[in-house]
Length: 115
Length: 114
Image (cartoon, rainbow over all chains, first blue to last red; front, side, top):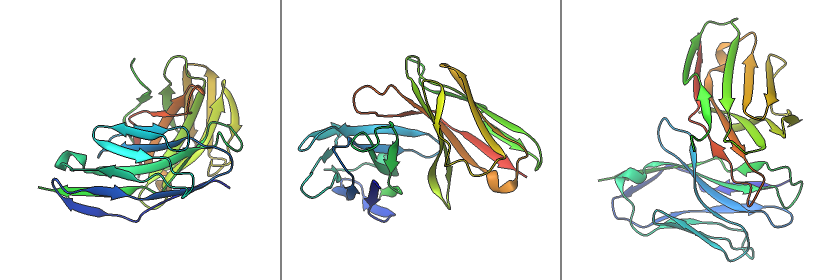
């Protein structure tokens, strides 16, 4: 079945460092891909999305490109801030397979940014 | 738009008591999802509805858990009787099935069963 694998956390960076959180997926068809962010004590918020191969999603300085050839959707940011400290989830829709509207989530990667 | 609304935000109850969690999805959305999040098991999908009909409840842990969606603007998740291992944050999310199927999450209900 469809699945999402994220890099293990926690990731600890200094402020203004470059961020990459790896995400790879297994899916049939052509799923949409998402990154969600969860700040402490809050629900998950949609950070960005991409719906087809080579699409780049971007928001708040974060970017991710839908790479079908490598089945990846890595999250990047050029200069992180302390306020970016959160848990990041990669997800895919099952629109390409069973098309129920379900999202398949990775296990989440905790990012801690130190001043 | 008010977003997904969940109540209560916090619930503390004793083992054996009935607990009811409530969710109001975003107006116009026709899919609703209940999740549970714990440190040990991460984020788990419990059940989801399309057009008020339960589609897949295979994630519901036991018969003690039940969920209903009597109309397009309201859903409940009930635990009866509750146990300490049910302590978790329960999230409700909704989507419109338009576009990319992105889901919008509520703030969650933090349940503590003592």
